[in-house]
Length: 134
Image (cartoon, rainbow, N blue to C red; front, side, top):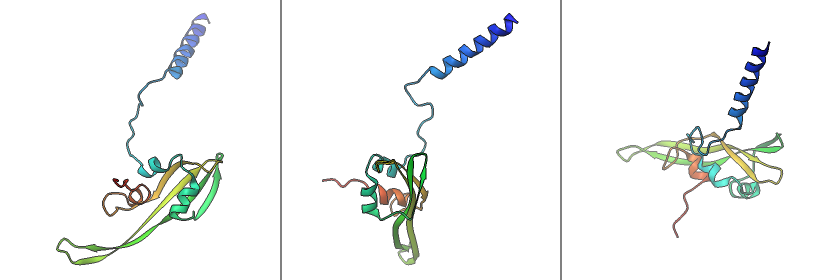
């Protein structure tokens, strides 16, 4: 009986020690960057919607308001390698904008994306364009 109690106490102490330790560096590195998240986190959702148009839907979840937004509609003409017109491509972006009760953006989750004009993400080009040098 005493052996079980000592073993159980030892296991509890070991588990408690594991849960209270912290590390200064993240265990998992950030795998994918989200330029739209980096650009808009902490900004007013009103400012976002004024710049890009109103959301198509919204819902409450865990004390936050989630706005589903779609926009950036653009038609581009694709040229072939020899310079001839190859057809049209239709671009758009869809995202969930998570805002707190103060209408401040907490996160931007990209739901629908396509290759952009200059990179791999049209949403990144649209929602987080590179700053112009002044």
